[in-house]
Image 1: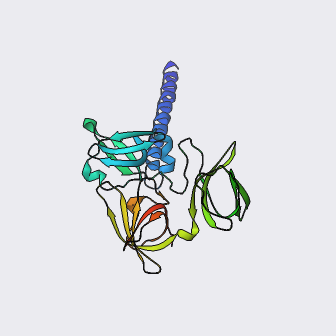
Image 2: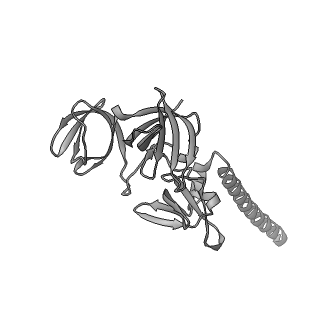
Image 3: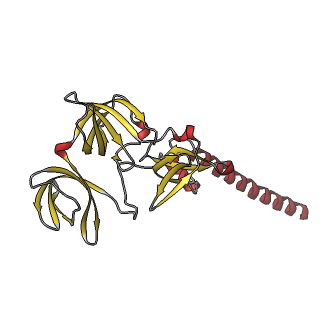
Amino acid sequence: MKNNKKIIIFIIIALVFSSAGCSRSENKDEYQENLRPGNESSAQQYTPGRYSAQGKIVKIDKDGIHVQEGENVNTYKVDQARSSNYFLGEYVGINKLDGGTYDAVSDQYYDYTQRRTSNGDEIKRVTATVGEVGENFITAITEMGDLKFNYPKGFNLKEGDQFIADYVENTKGNELLSYFDESSKINATVKEVSRDTNGMLRVYGVSDDNREYDINVDSDTITNFAHSTLQEGDEIVVYPEKTDGNIPAVVRAKLVVRRSE
């Protein structure tokens, strides 16, 4: 009888360990499945950090890549052959390597269509017509109704002009961050993409009316795409900060939007 009890206890213990082993195996299989391409969002719960650091490139020089992370700018020593793949204004992920060096990759998690300020406030965008222009405010007529922007800096459009507004909502109302004059925009086809010695993206484009442009996309230029993904044949809309009268005309771009097919 005692021997039978010992056998039963042994069987119970064996079943417990067998069950625990299966559970660990199933968890491991689930983890590996989550790491497969296409399931990155599921795998994030198992991954504490995607990169060692991530942010916008504001400078590239002999010291490496200077990356703006929130309100701070940090420098990472990245091999020049690697850093030459990226441009000023592009968002990258930084991975630490041995020997105090780093690698840079395009930040696949950054959404160029969903922007935020350094304080984390969502930047909203609306197409509008200028309504009233006051000393400390303007009104914008939109499809969703009228908006009021307080204390716009350097606003020089007049009533009836069409524009695009980038703004944030805060306790004081709507704050206008940037605006883009619709009458100044250039519709162009990308003919050539190059990179200058400072890492700035330069685009040779031809407009719909066959005018040639040398479009400079610097660290302050807003885009809806990763700079290194722009290709010959892409259709873009350019909102200039400044344009000269040369041929091709040199354009300092405020906003560049790649048109979808």
